Image (cartoon, rainbow, N blue to C red; front, side):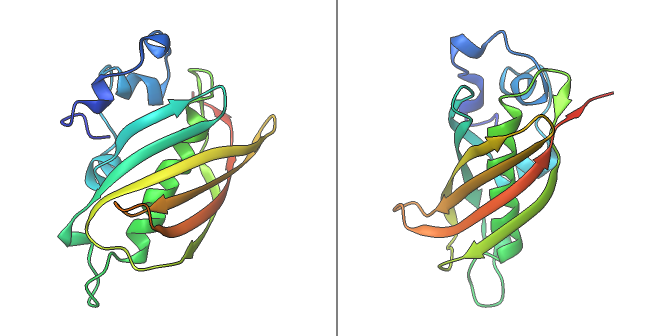
Length: 156
């Protein structure tokens, strides 16, 4: 999570008292995960009541494949780091939800720059949850879509 941009430190005051891995990073109580830092993760908007999130990523030149476009594994990681937080933002502070399955469909090549992920919780069960989302270019062109299954677990 990109705390250097300042956007993760501008947490909505209605969520300022929330606790847990997701909220602790946003409030500066915990360090962002290294993978999120690598991807340039930045929170744009989160609505835990709706199970929805919008995040941004910074696709750098180091993400390019030999064809000069962002390698699909980085796009999949961005989608995973969109869908997972959509669910994690809805959980109690002692819960986390690792991804069990991630299915990605690549629709168009992605170029370096700012990419936006939009994710939502499609169905939340007691333990198993279904997620969906998409990744867009800076001009809002749809680049990739994903669905995922996650399992809610208690952090020990």
